[in-house]
Length: 169
Image (cartoon, rainbow, N blue to C red; front, side, top):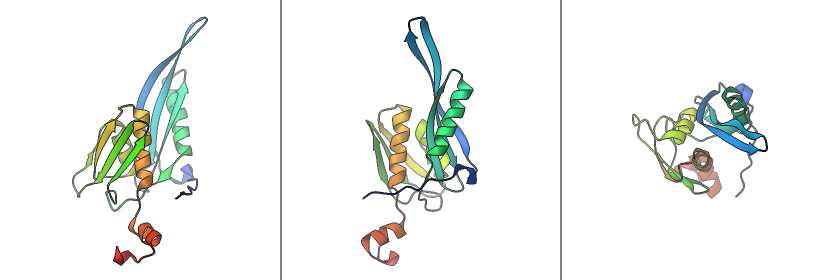
């Protein structure tokens, strides 16, 4: 089943950015070493359930962060939430990284580490249990988290896919 994603306009949301990681990268050239910085950034609007990620690279950290934010605004996705948590358990995969997301009762909070926490708080998820399996590489962990978030379905979608009423589920 293919899912058509329509492009979300970044200007209509109140986006907050969060830097997940900054990495100093060096390129060895004939004249010596060229240093630059790579930034991994997550942006999101907690009220709308919209979140995106991007990476930027530049000679200085602030420019790298700015480029990362611009890149993140270009690939925003809307996620299905039920009040303050996610509708069902889901496992997202990317490369050797796997992220398990489980719905949690009210008052639990965001039980997540590093990169997954940044995505969950930016998306507006207030109660969720997560476990990052496999790699600890922030790029792959964030991509696995987004894979999991895209798989989330609400009851109305599942009912229409099965050709049933919401009450029958």
